[in-house]
Image (tube, rainbow, N blue to C red; front, side):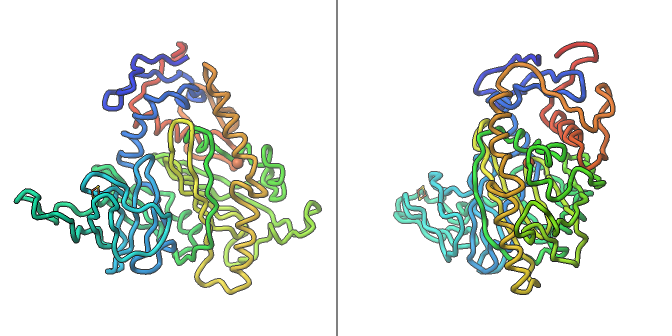
Length: 407
Ligand code: FES
Ligand SMILES: [Fe+2]
């Protein structure tokens, strides 16, 4: 079992001394439960140099539109200003820190903090503050605009980072970009259909370890898509992003469904297959059949994640195609989706089981226990996650035990 020398609650700014098991296929269960490791993940991953998808431009199409979200426990406010520019702010008043906006989406010309009524415009600038005649002479309104995060877009998908040293977004996404572009309709000209929002009682890494091996085994209805025999492939980038093109087969003549149109591929502009990207640390973006789905997510604690399944159509869809996507989105994928509803239950069972001491192992697609995992895999493999774990170990600063020794 892995050993730890630093269990203190205030360990966030200190390295957590932690030895990883020697085998490349093994994970220590305690990383799913320890609060000191979670605090270090916030610092090194969520508030570090990773980019996080926080919205798609289709969710705030007009000047003045906004969305609230979180990067881990930090509330953020994504605003399209009256100058049509999208900015991402920390959703916290620059006076004493009150959360500025609590609605999940909306439209506003200005934002008034309820505590002392400081007023911000939709570019994040401080416009007015009551009682200013008693403020120090040095006070300058321009110094107290909402704290803006660095942000950028790829095909309308809006990313933000809290890290000072983040790479440019293009380099960060690397080889995942063409897959992401395919999912986002090629050009990113999407229209929001709606959301399903849920939370899972699990660690964010347990949520994120969902892979192709389990798909038709846990999810019985997934067999409708004949995934198990699929010859698709996937790869994982150096930074832990996974990109996949999975082979699915049209199940229009399925004997299981009275109305097989729910798993039909109607958009013949694209091949009938599934394209998936799982961006490190925890955003899954997929096109399954005709469903275009971004799963915006964040951890609430070591034992809970919140996931917002956002569903989109393409702006060029006719009415029939839009209705098909809407119907397929709400029935196929999500917390109550035909092919995905069992995930929530298994995530929690995984989290409970991982409370026991010891390690867990990966097998399917693993070439050797003693060699670093490959970068390319088959669609039903689970070993791709190990490449992502290698990136995690590196940025967390953990070291692996010498071969032949337990950690
Ligand atoms: S905390 Fe916002 S105005 Fe005082
Ligand atoms: Fe699943």
